[in-house]
Length: 296
Ligand SMILES: [Zn+2]
Image 1 (cartoon, protein in one colour):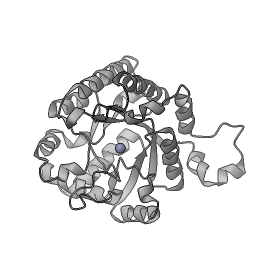
Image 2: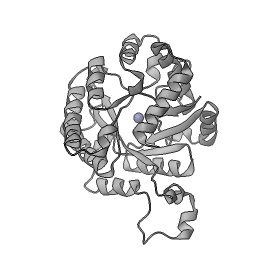
Image 3: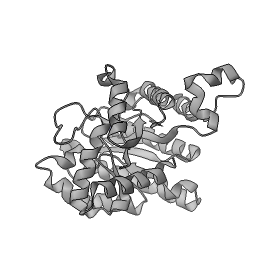
Image 4: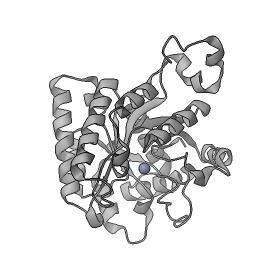
């Protein structure tokens, strides 16, 4: 079974005591790739360092909407630099190349495979909506420039199924995708994913029409999550990714505990049940989807 956890925050201190063992359990469970998205500058750097140190780990870099107030004028330059496949030539030396930080880049391909986690959050309302939208636009522009897909966070006020957050996000994404299409930008065929999707089937369909995938997390296994399972049932498997969002959102039977990438297997099992497939088929299809999207 080849599983992929397309969203896990492995730099949090909840993993400080057993990070290596946790990664070992993931590999044991069949997880062959894990994608770690940053939420700030610091955690984006931490994601890149984890990716450099572990062959199964890849990184996404970006500023989360709940951290929008940390955004400064030089943040794009900082992120652009993190995404570079090789260090600037003046810094480059064979001795530097031998240590971990530069290992992955020696093959000429960065392990930064996406811009994220970015998006809009009207639940915590940690920053004015206009500011959230501005930094989202700036990061979409960066994704276009660096030819990287985006990992999007979307959360409505009161966790509603539908509302202004989805409306604003879809309209921003719609503008971005039509610009990409009009320029025949290579990213058009792999624009990104709406991660831990909790919206309506209509929102899912609109996102699919723009070329986005939808990420499924642990709550799909929760006893009362009938609506979420209906939405997942409405989405063809070739548009789905599975993820843990570790350390958050642990699936049944680990609900309430710290989540970790090995548990993505429970998400695969539930999606298999919903789509009348075997877990191995779901693991294979969603891993292939991830490989197409993140081009790894
Ligand atoms: Zn996340």
